[in-house]
Length: 155
Image 1 (cartoon, rainbow, N blue to C red):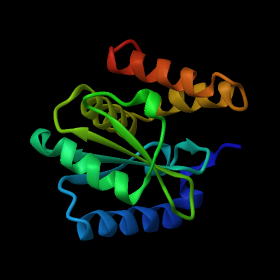
Image 2 (cartoon, rainbow, N blue to C red):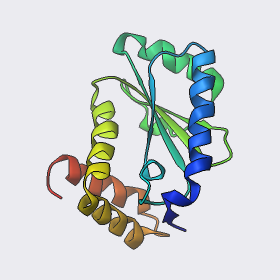
Image 3 (tube, rainbow, N blue to C red):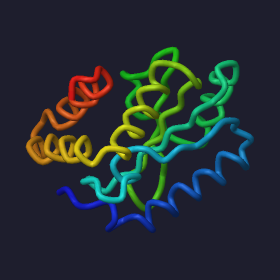
C-alpha cells in the first residue's frame, strides 16, 4: 500500500540518525545519504527507508567488510564491484546500498533523487508509475525502468 512520505517522516528520520551513528561508531568512512521515496516529503512510498553510503573508492572494500558485520547481506544477486546492499534492522523496512563515490551506482542513486526532488512534474510521473505497478510482480522493474529513462533524459 502506497502512502505519502510525510506520514512517516519523523520515524524515517530517526532510522537515518540511528544508522548514521552506528556507522560512525564502527569507523565506517563516507557519507550516509537518505534516498528513496521516503526522503521526498510528497512522494508515494511503501513505507521503507533507502540509505546510500557513499565511500571513497579506495575504502569501498573495507567499508563493505565492516557493514557486512553490522547488517545482513541483501540482494547478493545485485552485488558488483561498485555496489553492495544490506538489510538494516530498524523499526521501518530499511536497506543500505554502499557505493564508491563517482561510480555508476553512486551517480544513479544521487542523481535520480536530486532530479525527483527538484521537479514536481518528474515526481508526479514517478508516483504514477508506482501507482500503476503497485501490487504487481513487476513493481521494482517498473520503477527501475522509469529511473533509467529519467537518467537518460527521456522523461
